[in-house]
Amino acid sequence: MATRVESFADLREQFEAYVGSIVYATMTTVDKKGRPRARVLIPVWEVVDGKPVGWLATYKTPVKAAHLANNPHTTFSYWTQRQNAVSVDTVARWVEDRETKRHVWELYRRTSPRGAGYDLGQFWKGIDDPELHVLRLDPWRVQVIRGTDLASRIWRSE
Image (cartoon, rainbow, N blue to C red; front, side, top):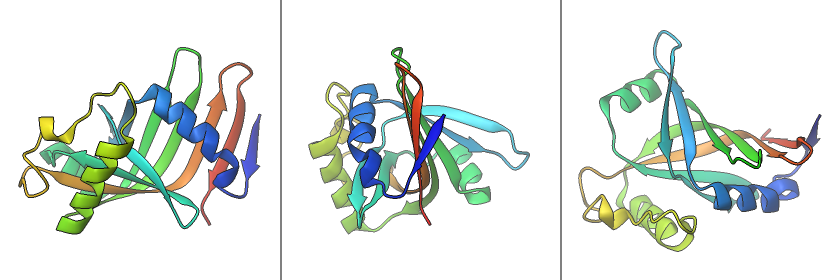
């Protein structure tokens, strides 16, 4: 059974623990016909004004760009064999300004989950690399599920 919480702070610790230990998320988008497409990625998360904000350094592939242009709603799913899970429903938008790219690069450097080995420098030359694109992820719903008893807590933005 799911319990709704009023503040993201009420589940932040559990969210950060699960995301930090699971590391990889499955990002799902849909095409114009409503068909889902999933890919495994590593977003980074921060809290701004009490709400979660996600960032994804990524390539702007034709499929991903077309899906998000048609429908910016995405879901990020984290799951571990211990049955702990996190589901983050977001609205995604491309952000291309240099200062945001610098901020995101630094977030990955400082906060990328341990063990992920996700050094952005392995994929891009730096923040001015034309292949580096950034998605801002604004969650409207976050659910954490504890695997031992399937206790679930849900936060929704207003």
